[in-house]
Length: 78
Picture 1 (tube, helix red, strand yellow):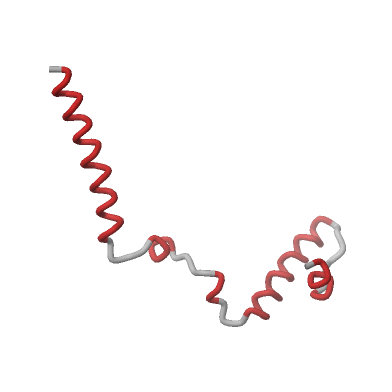
Picture 2 (cartoon, helix red, strand yellow):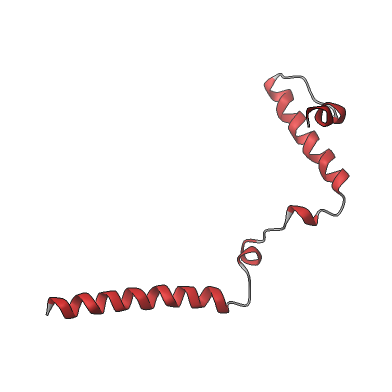
């Protein structure tokens, strides 16, 4: 009787895992769509995005009392 119970539990687990995989494979939406993720490479204006990132980094640096960085400082450090 224990052997039957064991095989039934294993079968249910395998069916559950296969069902979850089937949901992922046959879903019309991707995970990125569900989470509303966008690729960083889809930036419309990379220069504007870089300026926004530098402004945000400088805002954090001001809060810590560290001198701000300019765009030239960032380029020199690369």
